[in-house]
Image (cartoon, rainbow, N blue to C red):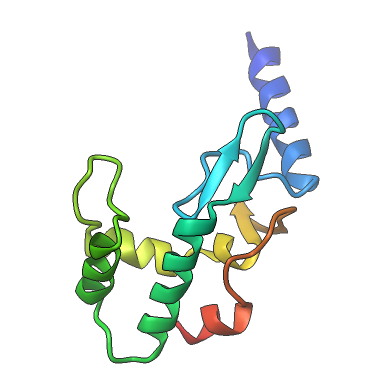
Amino acid sequence: MDSLAENTKRGLRQKVRRGKYPSVAPIGYINDVRNKSIVVDRKKAKIIKTAFEYYATGNARLEDVSDFWAQRGILSRGGKRIHKTRATFILSNLFYTGLFKYGGELYEGKREPIIAKKLFDKV
């Protein structure tokens, strides 16, 4: 039984080293099951990027960003407005810059970033 867990962990670590994110893609990206990769969701990515730019101005609160997304059809999985704690998570997620954290370490992903690192740092 232990070997199954070890093999699974080893497989995930190898996937991560190749720059592949071993989990569900965040909002703005889609899990492509055929290629087992993550691709940009063109429509939502544009909205996510605009929200980053909006928040970076310093004139928007997390609630404003949630409203911004809700007005454009970006909602939680349950179909509700994105809560401000979730908005914080999205706005502080390095995944959108092309990087990702796994097991406490930072990796460079093999996918198209939605935002520039400079914008992320400003947010």
